[in-house]
Each structure stands twice: as C-alpha cells, then as structure tokens.
Image (tube, rainbow, N blue to C red):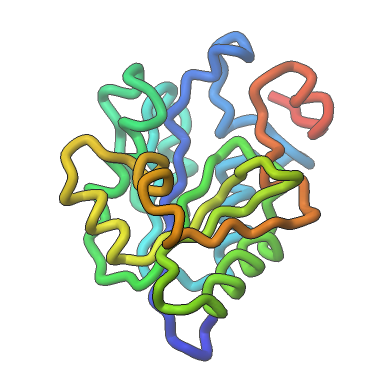
Length: 201
C-alpha cells in the first residue's frame, strides 16, 4: 500500500451500548490484558493512516481518555439511535483528502494488522470501477470494510444514507472478498462470544 502512497483514513465505531451483554462498554473489554479499543489502534498503527477517528457514544467518559491516545474522538450524542447514526457522524467528521477509508468495529477482537493489510492490499488490486470492499466468510458479510473516497462523498451527498445502503444500491461497484478467515465475522454480542474470544472486563 505504501508503494502507491495511498492516503488512508480509519474510522473506528465504538459507540454501542452493549445491551445484549448487560450494558457494558465493549471497547474496554480486555483480550490478553489489553482493552479492545487500544488493541485495534495498535494493530492499525503500521498502516500510517493520515486520519484516525474513534466514534464514541455510550460510556464515552470512560473510553475517551484511551481513545484519544490513538485517534481523534467524535462523540455521538444520539447513540441511542443506533449504529447508523454513528456511521453517519463518523463520515461527516472526516476532514482530510484521503483516498481510501477503512471502517472498523471495536468489538472484533481477532482483527489484526494482517487482517487489515489483506483488505487494503486486495483493494489495491481492484480496477477503478470498484469503490468498496467487503470481506466475507462462508457467504456472510463481515467487517472492516474499505471504501474509496468518491463512494464516501456520494453517501454524504445523500441525506441520512449510510454505508450499508450504498453497498446494497451499488453491488457492481463492490468487491465481496470471500476469505477463510473467521475474524471478519467474529464480533462480541453475547456471553458465549466473550468466552470464545477469552475476553475479560
């Protein structure tokens, strides 16, 4: 990626309530003693992004000091409106002339530097007609996703639109990357997920 001097922005979504886990801050769950939000940004550090944003909402007071060590923080004051509101706020908060945007979820503890590089390097091999990449595992869509700047601008030009709507409207401009890597669909929503990922609070 660096060889082409691609300018990367990263948006990390960490605003959720964690209601199915009994209302806890998933960003502060620890894997191998490291909070998930810190773990993600450490894995992403080698990508040399020109802009890094963490979108917080519920539990922002507790998460913000850690998030600010690695990224700019944007707080969704309407986080109760759901995931889409955080995505939209994050997109509206971007202020660099990036080429590619990587949008990640904080509750994917198995995402590593290797995972992220796979997505970005694969995107770089796509033709100019492709404006987004979505990883898939056994036919299931996963995250993080990668979007070209022009796709992000199209979303922003459409009031209330978010990424999933754009992807559904423009399938011919999306590369669905089928992988054998389960980390792209492994998020944390239940107590069983906590146990599977060996997470502690």
